[in-house]
Amino acid sequence: MNLNQLRKRLIHSLKNKDPEIRRVAVRELSNSEVPDRYRILENWSKYEDVSSILIQIEEILQNADWFDDSPENKERLNLNLEQKKILSNLSNGSLKVVKKTYAFLIKNRRRDFLPFMLEVEKRFDDSYFKICNIRLLSSLGERSLETLRNYLEFPDREVQRMALEAIANVKSYKAIRFSLLESYRLGPNFVKSIEKYLSKWNLEILLKVLQELTEDPDAKIRVSVAFWCGKVPHTISFGCCQILIGDVSKLVVQMAWDSIENLSQNLDEAKQILSQVGSRTNANNLIEKRRRVHSLGDNIHSFDTLLEEYQVGDLRQKASSIQKIGFLEFVDDSVIKFLKDCTTDKDFRIRANALEALDQLELKTDKEVLLKCLKDEHNRVIGNACIALYNTYNDEFFSDIYRALCQLGSSNYEAPRLTLVFCVDQTRDERFLPLIRSQFKQHNFDLVRERSLKLLEEWSEDSPAVLYELEEWKRSFQIALDEEEPLDEFLD
Image (tube, rainbow, N blue to C red; front, side, top):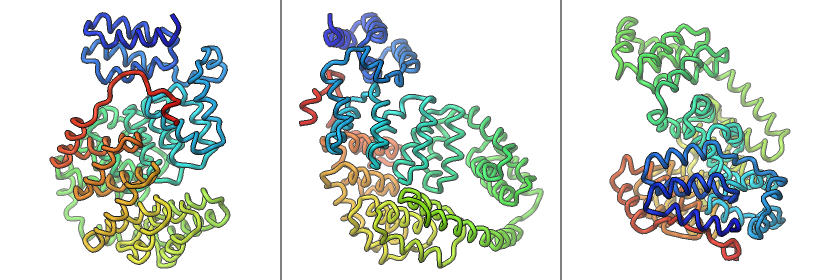
């Protein structure tokens, strides 16, 4: 019996009503040389209803050698024609051919080709490949953390957010540590993304991370820990704050007091310490005023450093410097003018990141700049302009925002549609639901549909209207476990 015949027989056995037959099929499949055996087991786990078999599959997948797929090993497995064609297409010089092959691999969750896909990503400066690889890496557990962390340095907010959420979903000690520190470093939008994971993580592990980082020698890390302690109402996190209010860094002390005030809404111990020190309102105002005056000088120096990085860097380094400017706490008019000038730069990454920085630094970003950027040729610039307009001029320009997002959702390409989903995720405004509905009902872009579904699943926890959309999706679209679509038909 050749591998294809064995594959078909085992898939058929997985669908058998007898749990014992399914249990044996799982074991045989995991011990076989069927190239996509792990993918088949992963897909079947969505349908299996016997807990002991689910545990069996989970243990197999956790120990799977997903990365043990060097070219030498591929040759040893005697690749069939389809697999050879996949490798050939991944090496193709045509961006269109490579993207279509990527789409095929993502649709069929072919993690067995991930090592080759990671190499392809280095050849093309395109966020699409990074987003696809993050999707596959996200299910590999802790061994993917370092690879995922590298994506946080790429100057594209959607790539960064997907990588950060993939890290958070691992839920291990190392993953939680990464998530807390990196989200605080990257800014408020990323903090917001990670806050929803606090209740999903193991509380004991989370508190252990906070306790150990409280003693970190880096003041920047202690500031972020002081911030996150205020988000976790527990006596241990409060104890961390008590340690940090005696810190040598004034910024750490101020953040620790702010977190104690947050905790006082749920913890009697925090209320008690505030009552003992008396009203801090006047003192806080004075401390804040002095801190702003002191920090202004520091930030000007920081801007000068980032400006120097911008002037000497290549295009990617320039875009990264612009993004970092958006994280400065205090800026003057010259910084704002510099960023506005960058919104007309010839490189789309610089334009997009300049818009993002302006949205973070200005209470009311110049509407003329934003409206002009709505007509930009690149989807990332349009997306950031939509978010900035929504944050500051929602009522006045909602129709303009809706029209721009609608155009993104009607694109013949995948990236603009992903930008639409990202923008709706940032705003969570139910008036945009028709735009998301159009994305999860289309069948040309699987990654867009998956992102739309993920958004609905998370959003539905707080919105009955979104829950209805999610149920509608479940009624209208079902994914069956079966043989994958032939590669030739997919590419044609």
